Length: 443
Image (cartoon, rainbow, N blue to C red; front, top):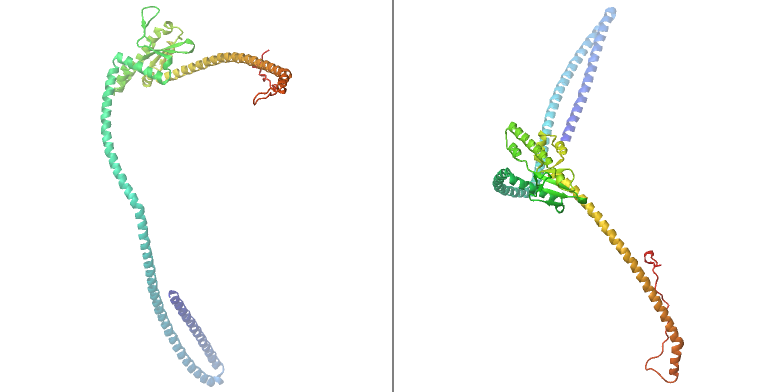
């Protein structure tokens, strides 16, 4: 409908344009004729001036021409007025038609747009309801799970609070126990027992418990017979060697240091701690355990019960390891001692493999001799079987050649056995197989 209205308006505009153009052309022609007549009038006037004899005629003609011109002017004027009015009417008509067409088109467009929008709104509303239903289907289980999860979180929070309270109590108890242990470790005899326990635990972890001798304060007198020596552990090594280990727990200064908040005091305590370990190295080197125990290398292992104990001392005395080597004292922490014990355990394993190989060699020699003896016995048995077969075949031949012919004569004389008859004595053709294995051959 909108397209038809626009086409109608365009057609009217084209029609009015053609009419206006034709009127404009006609007006231009009339104006051209008017100009031409005026020119001819001028020429006529000139002719009248030059030709007196024609003046009368020319005046008549002039009058006639003027009348004609006047009439034409009036007619042209009327035509111009008519054209002007027609143009105004066409303009007004065109404006009216344009406004009507525009108004109609606007109304039609608004109606059409309203219909389209209403249709789209209905479709959108229907689609929205469907999507809302789909979203509800998806969201509802999620909402239920979230509510369930929220409830579980509340329960977990309650349990966490309860566990936190229990943990606080356990931490408090642990702090009390730690404090008690720290106080206990300040006592020399308890500290010594704890060091021995740690040493035994390390030996168990290394799998060397069967190759180590633990001593509860064993003692030997040195060669000068004025000092009582008490090593904590003797490690047996392959080939009858042994290593002496002495456990030390220098914790007094170390515990004082870690309990201090003042850095300056802490440094002083750690310095005292490193000096205490250095003193243990010097004292242990002077004992010269390698001179008191046989088959012992010229070294002794100083076992420190914690990595932190040794590392803290190294911060203030980095040369502790070199000092220990100079004094023939090897410093070991749990990690390094486990590595040392594992290496010794590997040596024991190789020792056992060598012993087992030796036993296997001895058993192989015995088994070889017995197999050779068995070969001799087999050969004797073969010879005996061959001799028995030879004797059997000779006996069978004698039986066939001499005994059975005489026995058959009894049969001819009427002597019979019930359900029995003489059967041929067959010789044995099989002989015992000889053994061809070199180990079983007998010369």
